Amino acid sequence: MRYLSLVLVLLLVLAVGCGKVIEGKKIDGSKTKDILAPGTDANTIVQMFGEPQQKENLANGEIKYIYYYRESRRMLWHSAPKDQERLEVFLKGNEVQRYRYVYNEEQPITTDIPPVQPEKK
Image 1 (cartoon, rainbow, N blue to C red):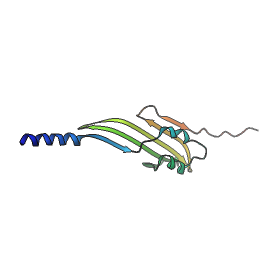
Image 2 (cartoon, rainbow, N blue to C red):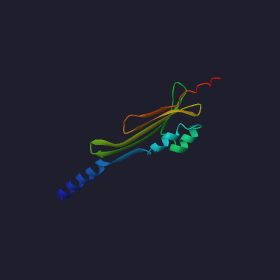
Image 3 (cartoon, helix red, strand yellow):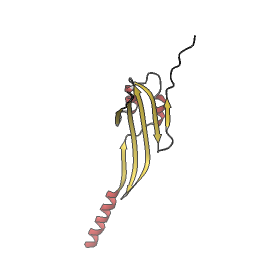
């Protein structure tokens, strides 16, 4: 009986210590190309990706929407990241200025709207 109790306790520890941890909602990377379309505002971003996990007011007057998704496997004391995504959208005056999309901590995709050049007459 004592051995059975010991085995059950070990199985319980292994079952609790191992598992999948998910934070946030998966980001559809194919939608990022539509972020800089003319007329894209905060409401359009929320329709595309949902409510952001974080909103930050920056010193330059911009608002940064942060979306993230993390999936990792836990093995007792060690956590191994499996999938990570992060999307940052910068808005100024309710218009998208630029964004930054990172997948699995690789080279980020950063896109800025070029400044409008006045037409020469």
